[in-house]
Amino acid sequence: MKRIVGLLLQILCLFGSVLPASAHHSFVAEFDDKKPVKLEGTVVRFEFMNPHSWIYLDVKNPDGAVVRWAVETGSTNALFRRGWRKDSLRAGDHITVDAFRAKDGSNTANASTVKLPDGRQLSGASSREGGQ
Amino acid sequence: MIRSVLIGMLFAGTAWPQGQSRDLRGIWEATGTAYQNLEGAPAQRGQPAAKSVVVDPANGRIPYRADARKSADRNSKERETSDPLLSCFQPGVPRAALLPEPFQIFQNPDRVVIVYQHVHAYRVIFTDGRPHYDEGIDFYMGDSRGRWEGDTLVVDVTNFKPETWLDNAGNFHGNKLHVIERYTRTGADTLRYEATIEDPEVFERAWNIRVDLARHTEPNFQLLEHECERDTKGVYRHPPQFLK
Amino acid sequence: MKADNSMKLAMLLLLSIGAATQSDFTPPRLADGHPNFGGIWMAASLSAAFNVEEHGASYGTPAGPSVIVDPPGGKLPYLPGMRERAADNDQHRERDPVGQCHMHGVPRVMFPPFPLEILQDGNYVLILAETEHGVRIIPTDGRPFLKDYSAWNGDSRGHWDGDTLVVEVRGLNGRGWLDQAGNFMGAGAHVVEQFRLTGKDTLDYQATVENPAIFSRPFTLRVPLRRRPADVELLEYGCIEGERDAAHLPPVNGEKK
Image 1 (tube, rainbow over the protein chains, first blue to last red):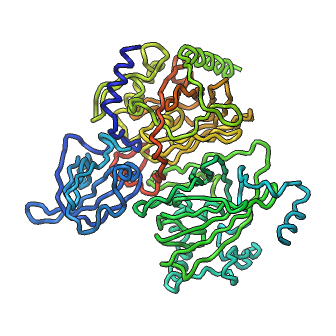
Image 2 (cartoon, one colour; image 1 turned 60 degrees about the vertical axis):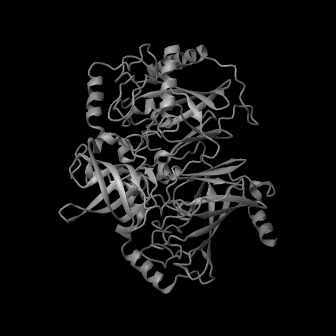
């Protein structure tokens, strides 16, 4: 009993204020945590919604081609509770995203952190590490 | 005064003490066909004419801005494919109260909760004076704050997403929608529902609807689970028993 | 009826486990004398949402203990062949019905990583789940169950046993998973839950699940719930309206891409 309590306490401390995984679906079904990607680009559209908010981003490749990416964040509720609002990102904003790529090879990714125009770095409330 | 006496006489058989009516609890449902078209419809295809539930303006027409009226007409033509309700969206307000599907009202000292059978949408209406959310978040069912005026629950609803319709006919609103609902008991088994609707980007002025709701008195009546299902093409559909 | 006897056994098992962990806390009461469960709650540990059994760290989620308190040993008492089905689910998490915006089912709906609201009103206990704007309306007036009912969150009937709310759930469609790892209960499952306040901010939640088609015996899990800070309110969680992941997931059971 004591051992279980101890283990539970450890888990609780680990989570503390860390947000729990998204209940929408498991990260692993769609994204590959062995395929990190860093995206720097211009926001085309920010959709603040459930089950996931989406940032549509135009990213310039080294060869000069512009590629449209769809970056998924956590739920609106998770973002809202972390201080995001529906106008936190506007078309034209220049942002940097650390994310994990989709398994199906498309230009889709799941954000870990998003660096905002004002320099703030916000967790993407990803379903990988926590998204409540 | 006279109207309430008349209503009282109308329901005298049910011996309901009109004074004690800050009790909205129960399972209610709109009678009538307002859900099809708030502005009513002429007699057609064996169906009798449906009266408009728009009580203000007096001509029963929604006071759209000219460009918005065109959009409503376009919605109407496309309603078999464009109605967000068909895509299993939450119905929004006031449409949720007008659907031909029951909803249940629960009351606690600091909140009223309405659970709609339709896709199990729900609203928590705080009555303790706490303020609305700021503008930074929108909801399909809006953000509701209520207070009592006499025996009427007045609910102020803001923070709407624009993607819901007001009825099956394509009457619609925008992002600046603001609804003020009024729930008033009019008898043991009746509830009057009124709503003031305004959106300066869509309507020229605020307008009002009025609908009477009836209590479900069947023994052991309960809401059923109405959950949409995704078909093999990835399209969400309502279970057939809930399609009307 | 065989089912009734099994349910009585399940209830006895559940109540005896509950009795063994009785607390001395005197709860706040409503006018009708019953304890007041009202408020916003969430599982104290998110471990069960990932996997109800003991599990190591994987897929970026941390390790966690089993929440199964019976049978001792904390393992789901699957019949032969059933654990293989759960393992197959685990390899195909795109099949998780929650990913298709379905309500979580009972007991999973009680421990997602999102808040719940419990509200009592006369002969009803109402549980609102933020995820999928899920709803459980639990009458406590002794009315009969629905006949031939099949639903994601089933059909619930509650009664009070002292300060414990006991809820029996029938009519579960069995399509929901038990957790994100693909554990499942199957169609025809019966659940008996027990809710008890153990402190100002703690609610003991236990569920005994029985399905002779899937498990060799009933099992009981226990997930304590903790009250959320006073400024937390449920937020609307529209799922179908904004669902965009399906296009990137492997097709599920007959879906065309």
